Length: 341
Image (cartoon, rainbow, N blue to C red; front, side, top):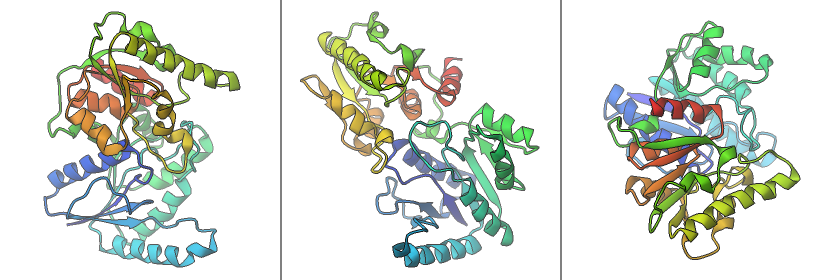
């Protein structure tokens, strides 16, 4: 069995890498263990998940308007073409098929997916959309979405919004759990959630009922979601976070900052660059790369997690770490509401 996977891994984001890791685990279970995978990515040099049955290849196109990339894109196109021809199954997962609600700057990938789907149809390939999210603001894009998903072999989504959107386009899908819920092999049913609050209400009162002495408190937070946006509010956001960290240290807690994204080209998406500003005294430390962050959850190196990143919420749940969920979007709302049941 040969499967080509089109994934959103290229930006040093723990979320994306763990989706791929668990996606492959679930696909092996659904098909068989000796399945061979070719994973398409924008960064094949720094894979997080290594497996003997995985080959990483670069997406086509890459910087197509730059002349120096002509040969590179030619090679990538033929790899894409031959891999498509040889594949028994095409699997597509992309954090969001269209990125129009995230703060950081990203390009709309819809046209690229329409281009790829034409080739999949030419060679009569089965296309499996694996637990995708769809987020559409501009209705003009709905026609493109329909072109992408039409006549697919199988479509799984991770939220009710995506399910209803496809349903409105007369496209059937099923709602399945985020693959990272399977990171510890079995689904966890025990509740680790303490409570939830909007990121706008993140302050030291969240900890008033806790004895924090010598506890390790993990903070998995991201920038630009704590206050209304303006030139002044950016400083207010940093002040609010600094006040919480000061309070935790004053209460003899050890603060462990958990950056989930180490994006090398988009500073707004890089948690590390944001969180490093809060490492200024004894009692505050920061994890230096994705592996260190992952091990902090897996080895339960923290006693409580302030979980804002979607996969900080899920990993805290999976590894039974008590956590306070900070919700900043529909995607985190849906997961937190499910975990509270």
